[in-house]
Length: 153
Ligand SMILES: [Cu+2]
Image 1 (spheres, rainbow, N blue to C red):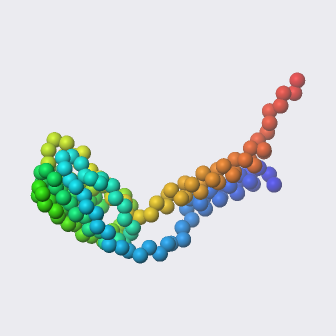
Image 2 (image 1 turned 90 degrees about the vertical axis):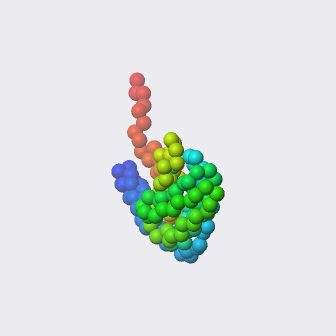
Image 3 (image 1 turned 120 degrees about the vertical axis):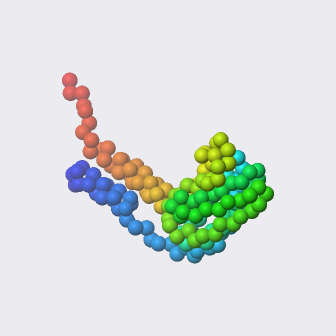
């Protein structure tokens, strides 16, 4: 076997790891309820993750002034008055990462009041681990094909 052939094999294996569809795990949609405290100028927690198909209830609690929560991509929002809890319910039917932001002007730093909703499993994590393992395995035999520069004098 020549080194080009082996290189080609590893490139092809890499492409398979990167792009082959993963076996679909049967994920049973669940109902998930999150309580998010909103204050100037942050959400707590500011990141949460659900599985596709989950029914999501976000309980927004404003602890100081009127705050809102608008989810990019889903185009839905709620507003909560101080001391009040408002619940936003939706089905997370779009996978991906979505910003959510305050949609009520609540003060000077209002544009920085953002958070992140992740819908889906982290496939890229597993794929990148696979690629890293492959890169290490591939490097070992290939390095023996790299012509050694020998001092001939
Ligand atoms: Cu705001």
